[in-house]
Amino acid sequence: MSPSSQWTLFIARPGRDRQHVIRDPRGEPRIIFGEDDGTRINDHLARYIVESLNAGLEVEDPNPDEGWFLDSPRDGDEQDPAILICDPDFEPRLEILDTDSPEVDQALGRKVVALINSYFMRNEASHPSASSAGSPT
Image (cartoon, rainbow, N blue to C red; front, side):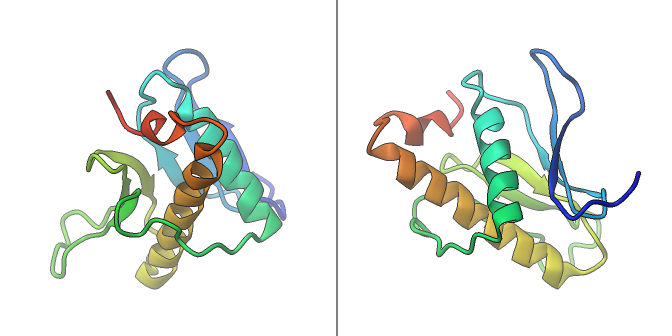
């Protein structure tokens, strides 16, 4: 795959059970979404994350105590180095793929969490049910 200067969205399984994968500018898969909850929230979040990463958007997490959060491996947990992004109901929804650089992976995870929480805060005023759309029913 030829590298590009942009983050890209790849749909691995088109259709109802589609799998969203975000690739970095080198074409490497970096973020994988879990199953959609039926609201097509993954479609919206994936597009927003890709657009924000490409725009270089830097946001402060507006909801660090109650919003989506980063669930990273515990010290000494060599078996499962996955960095997961969970919704407010503690359900893993995205995974940051391992690059052999935990600091880079953690930074990307924190950035994605801030973007997701910003997305829901921004849309909450115009769509009062938007924040609950990110949680599985």
